[in-house]
Length: 329
Ligand SMILES: [Zn+2]
Image 1 (tube, protein in one colour):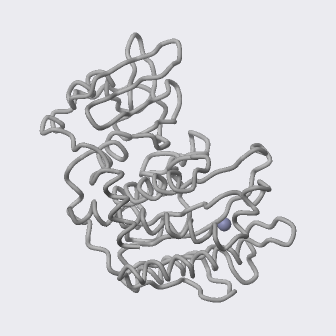
Image 2: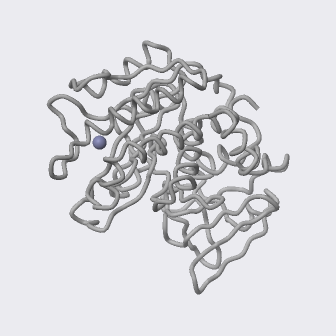
Image 3: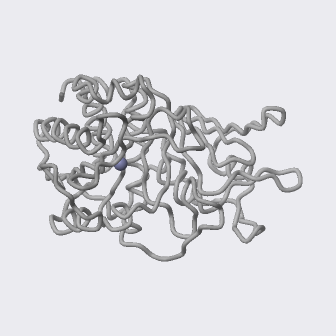
């Protein structure tokens, strides 16, 4: 795997994106409306050496520099950061003749992904806790005879072997078909002083999204923001244990999503925010991976195939190693 990973680093470039220049500290003055603080996106682009282009007809704003391309959809939370979809906490918004991005999204998404300096609290990765979703009396999603809990455990076992071969110490929140309480899964990682927590799941469509398919990775919703798919009003200013590693979790989620989409060629549903119990309670960088839809027949066939799950495990392991590279650079 090491040789393959070295190749991957060559292909992707060593860093996620060019670090922001020193002028990044001089962000434009924020303005307040709709109960939030915002930056004029054109001014933010200038302060950070991006060119700014607003396509009014397509309702898209594009910021580019030598190595980075940021695309924002007006009145939408969708952004695309170097080709990978990432959901903002608040929609990019037009007021008068200008387009604005929330200061919250600059602080919690753009800066962690683009800045050259990692948070001081980021630490080397030695111990990884893998969390196979569901188990025992909780089967998770069901499609015919398929039960999500079986496949999450099999994926965790495949991923554990790959990570152990790469030199990590790996613990599982369950190694058999047993029920483990959600809070206990995070508590186990906290007690083990794990450096990363990765929860593994497979999706099923909601009644409102019957064609749903593809890959998505969740990290904890930032304080004062709403989760990706909850109503805009469902904000919370409660401080959570998982906030401690919020920026690192976002970078880990981005790196894993980026490699998953690239290596598996499935639909990119993006990096999303949620206040799932395991993400709220784990105090180390923590993400939840949804590795395809059991409700989409072609994806269900893949999920049941050990060869596909081996590729999924490879991609998650490579994403973790890219994250480690970011921590240790
Ligand atoms: Zn699940």
